[in-house]
Amino acid sequence: MAPLTTPSPPWALLAEVTHACPLQCPYCSNPLDLVRRSAELGTGDWRRVMREAGELGVVQAHISGGEPLLRGDLEDIIAAAEDAEIYTQLVTSGLGLPPARLDRLVAAGLRSVQLSVQDAAAPNSDLIAGRGGSFAAKEEAATVVTAAGLPLGLNVVLHRHNIDHIDEIIRLGVAWGAERIELANVQFYGWAMRNRTALLPGRDRLARAQKVVDDRRAELADAVEIIWVVPDYYEGIPKPCMGGWGSRSLTVGPDGTALPCPAAYAIEGLDPPNVKERSLAWIWERSSAFAAYRGTSWMPEPCRSCPERERDFGGCRCQAFALTGDAGRTDPACRLSPDHHLVEAAVSADEEIPALVYRRPGRRRS
Ligand code: SF4
Image (cartoon, rainbow, N blue to C red):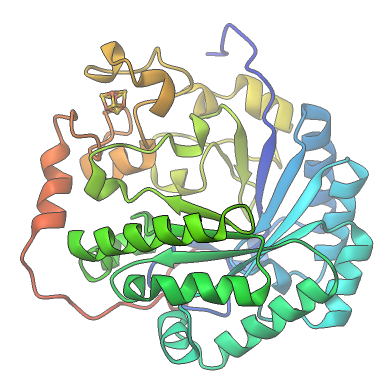
């Protein structure tokens, strides 16, 4: 049934232009069934998506993947965003970004780059990424980006295998010229859920890391922005995922699937629309998938009567589904959730730490 009221327009688009990737990170949040390259949207589809996004009110697009540099038509996609007056940020591993390629992307309209890195030094960064030489390529990419005068952000997913190096990671970001360092405590969606026990850092490591972040923030003041993505498994406080479901941003996947959140592929019964069949305006304003958990009226107790409901929107729908099988329940990360014991059991389990399972090409969605 179509929603009765028209929602405010989104301001951000996450364009996942491919699931293909040269790395094999064990914390990958992409879905278990990846979209094949043969099923990806074509250049014309992405041009239309960008045009419709601009018409809808989107002002910022994060061009992501997988590794978006694997798309030979990335320049065309960025140019379409530029034509639609959308600010573009490339979210990349940094592999495959020689100066000539960046020059072409900048000429097309690229405005900033967010670079992922797995640790502060090559041996462990390459080990986590599952690819030798990847740290050196990232370092080179950082040099190329800053030499071109583009704002550089560094994104580091934190977990048991790198969180003790957080001071060195922040120093690395400063040395590479990052204006923003995002320290993203690992979130357990997609492939990352398979490695949950191996990735959970433990309370002591987290507490030490938080202290380092506080100290370095005070020291660096306004020189570098340091973002600390809350480790919701440990804090009992759910994150306001995506700023509210269908509230601020939308994701378009490699095959055109449109979702309120990139992890929502996994939610069964959501019936997500596809940009090949519907306009972005229809998807945003009229699709049942985007309306499903928008606002607060869908909420069960304890969210329904909780003073925090307008702040965190009941937490993350994808996490609720991953842990309980029902995306409409309160996020189990919340200490008030009747399912919070599921999270507490995970963080307090006294299990042997298993080896990481790397993300390798395998079962894919067609
Ligand atoms: Fe947020 Fe719901 Fe928990 Fe309240 S009960 S803090 S609204 S998740």
